[in-house]
Image (cartoon, rainbow, N blue to C red):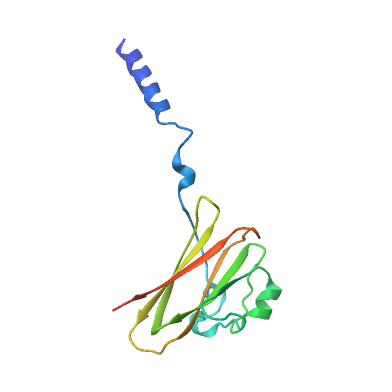
Length: 153
């Protein structure tokens, strides 16, 4: 009798945990990014340059031809069949020690690249170039970039 009771209780608890309104799809999905440094470019924050960018802007490069035409400072062999390049510039007030990236997709299929510039003392104000190779995007997927500075002192 007790085994039967435990079996019914276990089955009830098992099915009570399942719901059609589960919030699994409401969570943000973090996606791995790569940088052009992995393709042989060095010091990309200072060496890369995109002349068409004005101010704190970014662009998404989806093919090799656009990469060769728009990006100056490094000609990496990126496989644009699988990746898109988000590249932009940001005005910083002092020397940039490092750049950290977090790329995520929310439940509305909106992609956001969070770029954090780790600053240290010294240097002069200037534009710094950031870049992230992300998995191939659909042409209609909205992409946003959020930037911020944090200080290492």
